[in-house]
Length: 140
Image 1 (cartoon, rainbow, N blue to C red):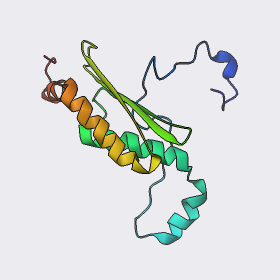
Image 2: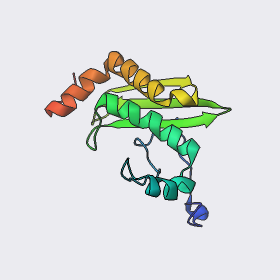
Image 3: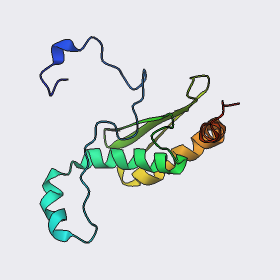
Image 4: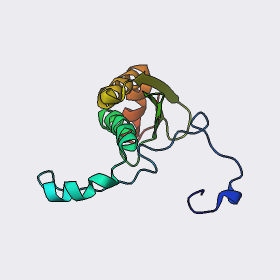
């Protein structure tokens, strides 16, 4: 809203404590072939390193959870004072169950941090929630 000049329409900002967005929400990505060095060089100035680190952590977590468009997974990564802080949740579609977790670590460990948080969520009940979602059942 701020970037669009519509800041006056904001009634109340939502904090990550109130609502975690979907994985990678708000990030813009451009794909190119891995072996296309010319295009990679052309795109390099557009890369925002902090955003790339944050999205890597979120996507690593989502990949380990086998998340997709229909799966109720939220995450939010921040870089604060050189530390990566990843928060996440897995919820039942009806909101009856929510498993939350968070991890902090070094930015260069973004993927490992994401996988580690996913493992914690799975062990804390997300495995059952996700199994029920994929089976089209209500979680137990």
